[in-house]
Image 1 (cartoon, rainbow, N blue to C red):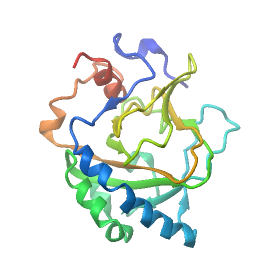
Image 2: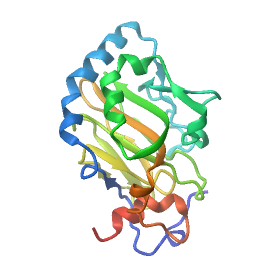
Image 3: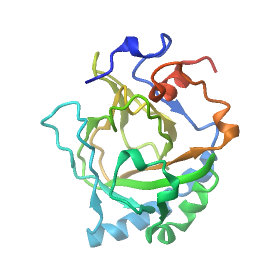
Length: 228
């Protein structure tokens, strides 16, 4: 069941996201663009990477849950994939690809995490959309993660399913509510990719985040809609 607007704090509006560009080294991130693209293109030749799975919470039931996007795991879990394990950092360890993307790993080490769980690159070299979806439907679960990219070519958006309004992410990094709104991306020409890192934010960084009294999953939206 989709959550209705009265189940979140009054000041929250959707679609919304919180840019993290002020908290990360954007210039260093942008400098990794060619480095990451080159290594992804090498992997494209092998065609061995797993397809991205949106999960079952699609906006439209007939939309593909495996739209064609590929994934590179920089960390691997001791258990089968589950959205509810993304921040169970004790389950995750570096995957073989972490060494291949060592400079990206160095950058990830500068992000405001006290511990890290899943690390994932999502990429596509064919112009096809990623179906609008939610990660899960448990409003008590708020994942702490950073979504980021080295360039702005991927047309990634948040979507309010009630109004069908789309908000395209214009920043290099973001944290967003993955439960009370949908997200996806439009088709893009050429190679496009983004990275998501899940874990636990540092206590210092957590102190910046306004926490909702209800619906904990809406914390990113509350921050995005709060006065700076």
